[in-house]
Amino acid sequence: MNNKKIIPFINAENEMESSVVELASQYALNGADELFIYNYAKDEATREEFIATLKKAGKNIDIPFIAGCYVERFEDVKKALYTGACAVVVKKEILKSQEAVLEASKRFGKNKLFLELSEEEFYDTDVKQDLEKMEIGGLVLKHVNTGDKLENALMKLDTQVIIRDSLVRNDLLTLCSYEQVKGISTNHFENKSIMKVKRSLLAEGVPVNAFESAVPFSEFKLNKDGMIPVVAQDYKTNEVLMVAYMNEEAYNKTVETGKMTYWSRSRNELWCKGDTSGHYQYVMELKLDCDKDTILAKVHQIGAACHTGNRTCFFTDLVKKEFDNVNPLMVLNEEYDIIADRKKNPKEGSYTNYLFDKGIDKILKKCGEEATEIVIAAKNPEAEELKYEISDFLYHMMVLMVECGVDWNDIMKELANRR
Image (tube, rainbow, N blue to C red; front, side, top):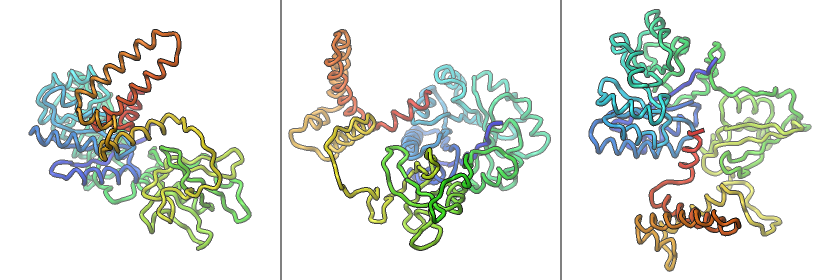
């Protein structure tokens, strides 16, 4: 049975970009499975502002998000998807062009599109025909009344359904009980623990994506104090942040809440990292080592991990050998950051600043030249020249990325979406 999803919705109409981004980040960290962010404004300026907001939100969250927007032409769907959205919701009530939706479906796939209907539209139109005609793969149904009528209507569909509901009149458990419903989109859980809600659903037999330990704590090998050491590591960079200890209570609390909770040996009490400083560690993954005596926690770290204000507790060098750091992701990120800093803080005589000063046409010309050099070098049986030309191209490509406001996270997310 597929897990039911909790999909908070964010109405971005008449909202500041910063407010939308902040709320999206809160939801993502507090247990949401996906987000539904929408603004159905028709005027061009507002639509462009919304696209910019989606891009900013996408950079700040690590969960999928669906975008609801006014669709007048194919480009509207394309722009929304290019923000990083996993799908686009088109609202039937204001849908300008079915042809544009059909074109988007043929280009990106029907699973990238949802049709939003009110309950009245749901019962008064041939929903299956609409979905098939525009080749849309999903349905967003809003403001429903639960009961046999709804259940019977849903059973006739062979598509994924999201119910959008404020949960004022309807019960979450009832909405989740419909087999065709893949998720509930609501604003009811703003400033609430979604992980807690999920655990309540699990207790009622509803399958949801909540943390459950694959190995019972009783199988862990503990030290003489009944505790197990935990190494906290940044889930993106693999940087080691800190080491602390858990007893069974702390471990269970961590799994329950999704926030790293330790046992303070100095204070002899439970300690949720961040309760005092705000520098929470949100669980992304927990691993047990081969001897079952150490936990590796991959976390989303807010702020600094160390009480000194340093990002990591491991900032004091004891012994160090000079070596080349050839981790591809780290090298590309560091090179990108240097280029971005050159744009922000120009340096006299810098070739990078020369490219930025000349502008986009010069940068594009260099990218084209370097791409051609790769083709020529690839015809040579020796690999040395090819490595040199690819490195040249990557540098100029990163200059272009900085100039256009694209970073490696954007690229990695897009590649991941294509898997």
